[in-house]
Image 1: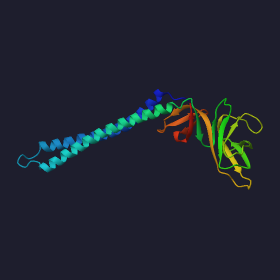
Image 2: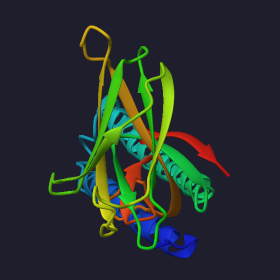
Image 3: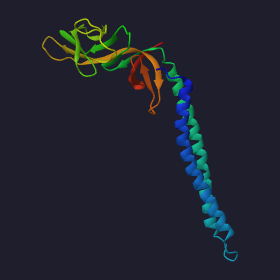
Image 4: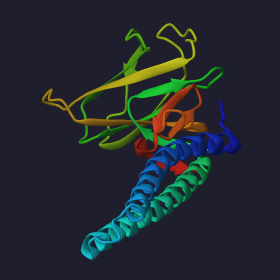
Length: 225
């Protein structure tokens, strides 16, 4: 589901406002209490034995520091809100774009043509076996893959080993690569998908991919607009 910018601003502002309001309320209460105590102390001091000037100066310094702290917090809240807005606006630019995401688990959406995976071999392999499993860990397809060192591209058409179309959901690719001596070769895996929206409901910004899967921004390796 695509999240509109209006919804995002409302969600983000609400979270930011709650945090800011709590902090400001606490400081304001402390500030008001300090002023009340200082005023009461001045009103009830003994004219024949007035408040010590050093003590009065010290309290004025505390007053000044508290006032500065309130102003600083307001400034920081404003900066945080601005940075959050910039981050959301930047993420909105991802919507509709194709992204390359680190990870072996990828979404298969309703009516999708399949999943495009990329696997990176540290060295040339003698054999490569590709296995695809569903979200329950059940194997749905298995076959051989390219053995070249570096990036290799594999598109799965969304069917099982018998050629039957599988249900929409998330599927995991496992790559088993060995060299001529039968030694395992390290392999990195990524996939490509289209961004359908962004989500901030949990406090962290994530990208919604076709097939109802969410990924964090730091998992994105590449974006193509």
